[in-house]
Image (tube, rainbow, N blue to C red):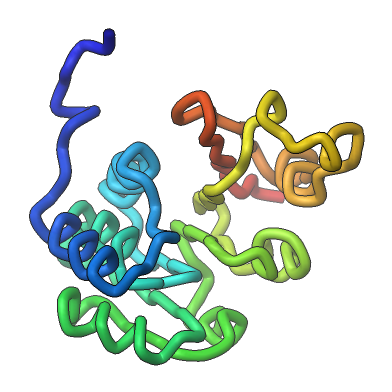
Length: 193
């Protein structure tokens, strides 16, 4: 049995509102609370320019907003106009810019001190472009990674493009963290060259 601490039970009110809205809309791809608390911790650092790729209904956006400083700016982007519109209704703030469209268009607003990427194209297919958008010393976090012990049989023995890129990049200090037995994330910091 796990001991109860604030760190494993805390959910900001605005996150609860976003989760309820997403649930009513039938959206099942919101971040988990385990990941949200980690994102909250990272967003609470002195990060001035933050990028979220994959707004969805704004659950992860709410975790970020709950912790970021008042002088920080968040740019969040998603391709689904109705989801972005819903997120704005709940989470609209002066220091949050909601974009609807291709995530690559948001990169013009960088470099970024913290990036949360929840889109396969950004994590894998255009990973180098995402890397170039990180400021020196900036952090990147990627979620929705399945620990290798839970890989499907047809995945076993095959290279993992996401892990290969981010965990082997020579200009990143990167680690994979297990949030719970079935959920892993990558956290990476861009090194000065």
